[in-house]
Image (cartoon, rainbow, N blue to C red):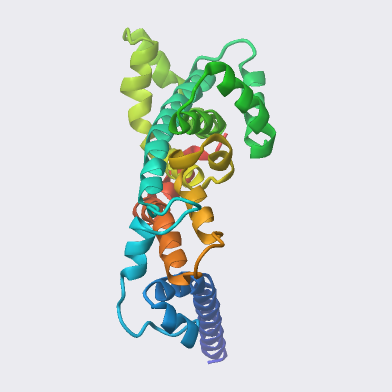
Length: 294
C-alpha cells in the first residue's frame, strides 16, 4: 500500500510539473507572438481607428487599404511606388545567391573531405575563421574588388557579395556532413571507374538532401534579412526590400501611416516565414543528419 501511495504521489507530482511546463511554454509563445499580432491587427486598421483604439484591440473591419498602399504607392524616400519593386529585387538577389553558394559549398565540402590536398586543413581553418568575421570587416575589401571588376549592377553586386560571404557557412555544413560518409563508398566508386565529378554528382550530392535543405534555409534567411550589404552595395531602384522598408518607416514627410508601415514589414517578413513554416522540419533533420558534426 505504501508503495502504491508513493507511486500515486509521484505521478501526481509529475503531472503537476507537466502542467507548469505547458503553462510556461504557452506564456513564452504568447510573448513571442505578441509583436506579430500587433503588426497584423494594426495593418488591418484605419488611421482613425489606430489613433482612437487600443494597441491590442482587434480591427473593427477587415481593411486591406494599407496593404495596397504599402505594395503599390507608399513613399520610400522620394520614390512613391510602394515596396513591390524592391520585393522583386530581393527575389532576384536571393534565388541565384542561395543556389550558387549552396552548390559551390557542396563542391568545396566534397574536396575538403574526400579529396584532401596539402594544406587543406589550413584552408578549412581559414574558412572557419571567415565565418566569425563581421560584415563590417569585409565591406572595404569587397568594395575595392567590385570596383576593380567593374560590376555596375546593384543586383549583380549583391549576388556576388552574398555568395562570397555565404561560402564559409555552406562549405562548413557540407564538409562536416561528408566526413560522416564512409571513405569506402568513394573508393568503391573509383574502382568501378567513376571519376571526380561523377562521384560528386551521382553519389554524394543525391545523399546530401538534408544538408542542402539546411543551406537553403540558412542562406535564404541571411540574405533576405541583410540590410548592411544592401545599403552599401546598391542604390536607387536596385535596392533590396530591407533597405526600402527602412526608407519607408523612417520617412519624415506627410502623416505617419502606422498601418502601412506594419503591412510593409509583414510583406518583408513573408518569404522567411514561408521558408521556415514549409522547411523548418527539414532544417532540424539536416542538422541532426550531420550538418553540425565533424
